[in-house]
Length: 459
Ligand code: C2O
Ligand code: CU
Image (cartoon, rainbow, N blue to C red; front, side, top):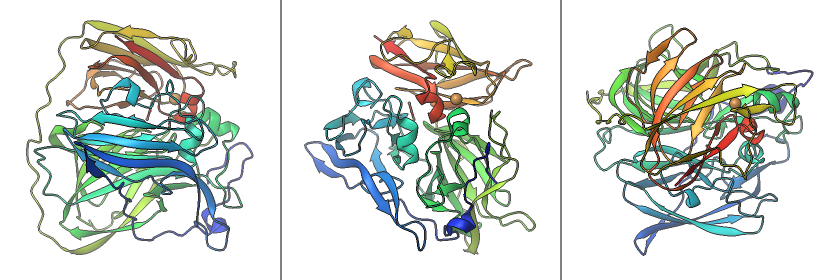
């Protein structure tokens, strides 16, 4: 049970939340082609959705009345114009997590949209940007609450020559739901503010522990989003054959056979999953035990079932190409920086720090140059895992230090989130191709709100 410091969360049985329903398909955002762009509308507003049988509907905040928000799908080279309206009682933004788009379209905390106001977001998707992204609010100090109340949706960019286009796709959005006894979305406890929020339920596409049919021998392409506030999910499909084929910023070079995969908050993965239903092994998708150094709450010490998988008929296994795409390593960096993550539990006003400082909207922490390759060393001197995220571009992790020594990253991948456990360091390289302020922060959303964030000013 997930109880923390005298805080009792009602369990599933008490709430009567249904499980085992078919995996919901994500709703799609309708897009219309006009003046050379795809146009759509997104509204953030309160909505009540029936969740618990025999209880009043649960009040969420949602994009276009849907939790998760409507999925947006475009192709490389296309331009999106999106009308956004804020009908929430708080300022908000729409942040396009991971997308290489101009800073003034990125929905960062420097550009809030006030309640009752709106704006257009307009950007083009450059060649090479195919991948699995997402969108969520990013106003200063309110990001965690707006996301846990239901505001988040996925954004997929299709490649022109997709070597996996022949595989059927499943999109799985993992989110976290914490309810009180009345079935209302619970406010954050002190433990949530410290550790990052965890609820009673990890949902898949808005449903608790739903069910999916997979043919025996059938190979599918799964895109998985960790849209929880704070959970590091160590995903496993013990019965099945699983290959990692993509990360945040799209396909990797060659499929890699994996037994499990650590997906930190904010990160995405693409998997090629083949239904094997090995006898004696659980057939579903699990989150294996993972300790992330929490200060107050208990660690996840049991495997958490996320999705039931039932065996369908025998299906011929589709091929998996040996080579997916070429990723060119970034050239030698011209700038190197250190980013030290720390905690100061004695200072409640500034508990989560980057290079000893808490976030200040009026301070630029670093100044960078358009087109320059930078290497950042992220050094976690704190007691908890902190998933590090950078806006505006994708990066390549080059080396990791596990406390004993540096180890070369075994494969090239484009990412925008990397988990950094306590006493460990990560080196990553990137290039910013557009000017403007770019945020970097911990993607445990409570830590971001508490100030574990900085700004890189690119000129
Ligand atoms: Cu997903 Cu700065 O955020
Ligand atoms: Cu953190």
